[in-house]
Image (cartoon, rainbow, N blue to C red; front, top):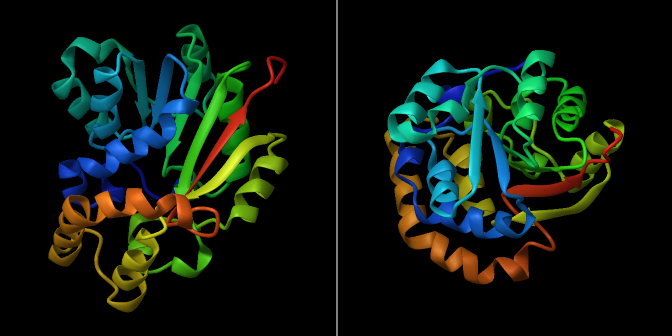
Length: 241
């Protein structure tokens, strides 16, 4: 079961975010192959960056609005955008036929009730390839924004490792990301209980992207060994999976 999907899970201001996604891409880039499928591409921020960096980019989402938006933004790439669910066998066959070598799951797993089964289904799509998962981190941060976005959970590092282990997957790395963002999320979601698309949330997102992210990038190597707003895991999939 998926609690919420597509653009309903995101603040509108995320479509204007620039520096944060550049930072995310810089963290992901060493892990990416050449043919990347993003699950839940949202407003297409990473699509823009990946295509600019000459990646062969695919995207899948069960929200038709997301796919239509991608087609409007990147019409030359439209044949690589799919409206569907990777948990369904026919779509797994489509992904395999495209010779995808990397699946990128950005803030999707927390929306799926049975996260272990979902991870198994992802692995079936890229035997011999790689899955990169980014999820909201730290259970203690769960608050109003998580509930409204349809998050079943946030993950501590151990939680994510356990879910991967139950899915018979062994991560090559699991690390925290964006330590400075912990304080901002706690204030917005726990202290002030912002709404996901409220004016305060929109202003906070734009302020953070313009002024806080550059500083966060500098100090994150000192913080990420201990905590972060997100977790990033990389998993190599056996050819025989």
